[in-house]
Length: 147
Image (spheres, helix red, strand yellow):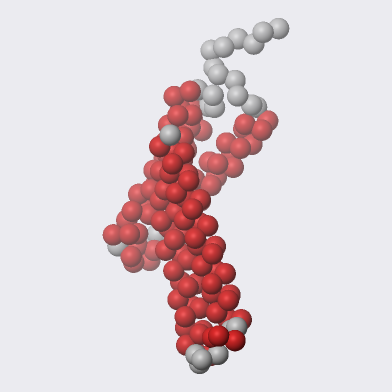
């Protein structure tokens, strides 16, 4: 239930981020009611909206990584997937949580660790897990198939 709630927060934050992008687009199209502002101010305001989208992204990423960590632990306990894959999922998701929290505390952390490295291992886990489930399906270990 906790992982499901965190996934909901993750999706909602990314929905807000997407809506912010539409706000920036609306500012750049400059409808009639915005003609009272100069072009430079509208562009600065649009740039502000574009910049805040990444703040929403990393808040959402924190909750998505927390949910992924819980789900990877459940995969590990269930033995539905290889334990090595589940362990990789736990490590990758925990790394993403740690990097995101450190980024909140030290905003210049992106100068030390490239931002692409935050969620790439977790994305690799999700892709490999998806293909595993697609081609192998769910078969708990220790259960013999009926013939």
